[in-house]
Length: 467
Image (cartoon, rainbow, N blue to C red; front, side, top):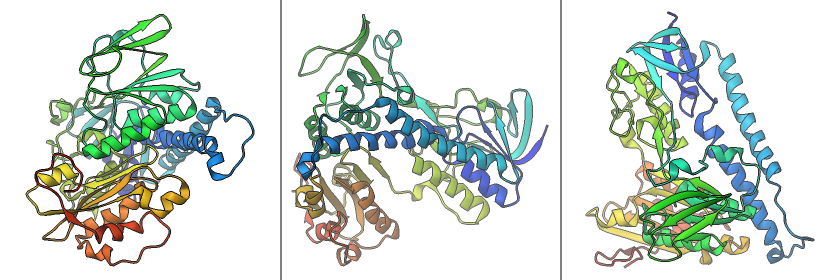
């Protein structure tokens, strides 16, 4: 049984970084991967989808060329095979580079295969036993099919299998109106597909404020995407060469017919075939590994990082998991998950950048909340770019003057939001940014302006607009 100082199961965002860091500290490290090096982000998530979003954006701008005084002869076409080839090349470069780094790193042994625990300190890989005093689980998650009638008998795509599509679906039906569904919906509409998005909830991205959801709906419907909300009962079927989605909605036809179906309604952790019971690692009812604030599991000497621990479903939260573990184990720096500030982006065009509280959360927080807002139609950079959809909102505590959160929906807002996030981590008063001189013309230059025009939010208003 080969002995190591540490075993890392999975090569997603956290695993390789931790392997390099532990190996650099002189530890003998084994890292195991059963499928594709790089995990979800590199292979079926961030990297490929954002590459395709870029292609879709190029198609959109080409069709709008006349608005900018640019003449393009003939119709704008999209070659889906070339779109896929570009995406595949970007993914391959990232995956191959990471694979090479793991294979050549000093003090790191790279294993291919499915790792399963045989004891708290023992792991089996296709009959070979490894042992270590420390084990780190970084196995990620996967898409799940919802418990709806006909799903098992109807061919469907997921975010993973969409990566193999090199053709244009005539009519793509998408079940799920959140990140994955919206990004793929807008992307394929811009490529030229007819797109219908079906959402069970009364609004898209229901965890956002109501006016943010409404603005997103207006953006995607403005591009010709059909949206069906309040689909409390969805039934799927195959009829000849067509996909049929039957819906019980408050408005619209009870049946939608399309050529292809994408299910974008949930994910589950890859924890069901790891032998966790043999290691004493406990999971919750959904299969997520239970961890404490420093990501230690219920078994001594075993940690869980990334999507499988239920503490975040993003690449940046997974990488932060690595940073927390490295800080505690190697730097004598006590860091924990509880120190994190909620932050993420929705990569439709224009993007939504989100940090901290929503307006709805602020209302029930018991704080004296002030809010400032600016429509993107009043942002010079947005006007100059011809991209004026959306608005920006910042929330602050009227007593402590700390920023509580922000919802920035507009061009460049996925980058601009970090100025707010950094100030929140610094726990600096909002007046620090209000008094700062930002560069013109940018989207970020309006953040001090917004903070100079704060007003109390209404305690009784049913709308999330300012009171």
